[in-house]
Length: 80
Image (cartoon, rainbow, N blue to C red; front, side, top):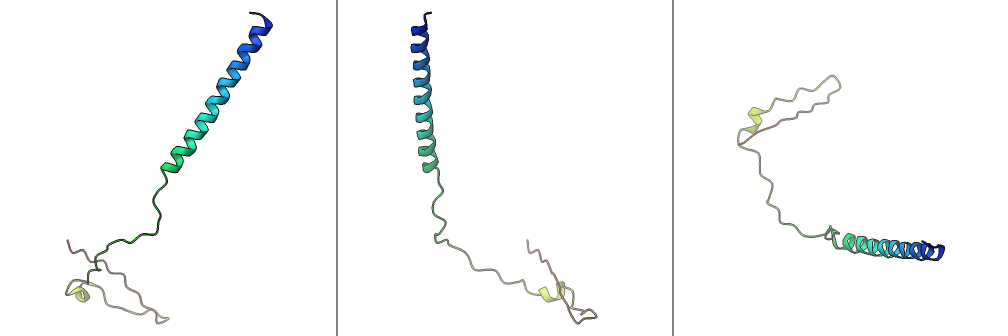
């Protein structure tokens, strides 16, 4: 292979590589834009919160304040 043929082949290889990079970059941007999620602000339907079951007060412990007069209770009630 002569020097002129090598340079021509090298130029073709560089041209093909540049076209591949440009096409790949364009596809990446196009696909990235099409995969964006919808806007976050939208209306959603929700059901009203359920009230505690009857008799829940007897299932939870009573409040007993500590020495500083603070009291806190965490009560989990499973209804199912």
